[in-house]
Amino acid sequence: MSVPNEMNAIGFTQSLPIENENSLFEFTLPIPVAGENDMLVRVIAASINPADAKNRARSAVETPHPQPVVLGYDAVGIVESLGKNVSGFAKGDKVYYAGDVTRAGSNAEYQAVDYRIVAHAPTSLSDAQSAVMPLVSLTAYEALFDRLRVSKTEAKTLLVIGGAGGVGSIAIQLAKQLTNLTVIATASRPETEKWVRNMGADHVVNHRNLLESVRENGFEHVDYIFNVADTLGHWDAMVELIAPQGMISSIVELDSKVDISPLAPKSAGFVWELMFTRSMFNTSDMIRQQDILAEVAQLLDEGRIKSTLTQTFTGFNADTFKQAHHVIESGKSIGKTAVVY
Image (cartoon, rainbow, N blue to C red):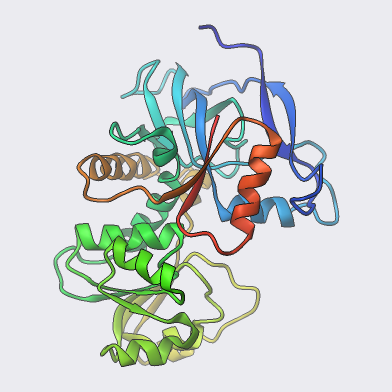
């Protein structure tokens, strides 16, 4: 089947409530041209992430985008063509990836993506189950092993703040499968507590009174903290809970300053994790994301970790994507949401 000249995409130009008719709309644009390091992928499924909803709701509040912005990060698709520098893949391969925030997203029928941030999709999962895994897996893996520099053998403690979310769920699973860590995860509702225990958490604490809850569970300090929920709101508790020479990492940006000086006596550290850093800056180790995704696919196919898909929508149209965004914006979702094209 030959690739057409044009494709359909879902995008936005204004930041509008998701209920608004024009919050997301369908339009056509030329098929992207694959560069020398790119593959052209026919997208067959994508996940909807909080970053999608946040971008749509915040990026064009005062000034509309001059051209529609195509959202979407995670995707599963079929390779249609390969740039001259691409190796390890062939036309017809099924792949999965989290994309590049500086390029057009996966909410389109075709997408050009750098092969160094792509891996072969898991073979044992459905397209929807695979589609929800790349972004959260890369984020969790990088946070644990590239930012926090967790030892895979030492018997230490990890606190995951936001354990029932997409990233937190994978962080728990990776920590339990690949390290010797005792994992403490936050949850505040019976359903989220059940969820994080199902992911493998050894202890569950309440984020509403985080310091007291961790201490009540028998932990004066923890060696590592990974915050995927609220950096500012939990800052004081994190500073108090982190062990001497411990490390804190977060993916949640700050809207005001925090005082890092209390970390000094402990020689404790704080480091950001942004999954898009490697592709944004074309770092020399960019292909590490391909390696991580390949390892995650193997873990999934071996049944050592599981997809966190909880809801699937079907159909490539604006209404389907609006429904998925509504789920994300509800603040009550557990696990991940996918759209199958």
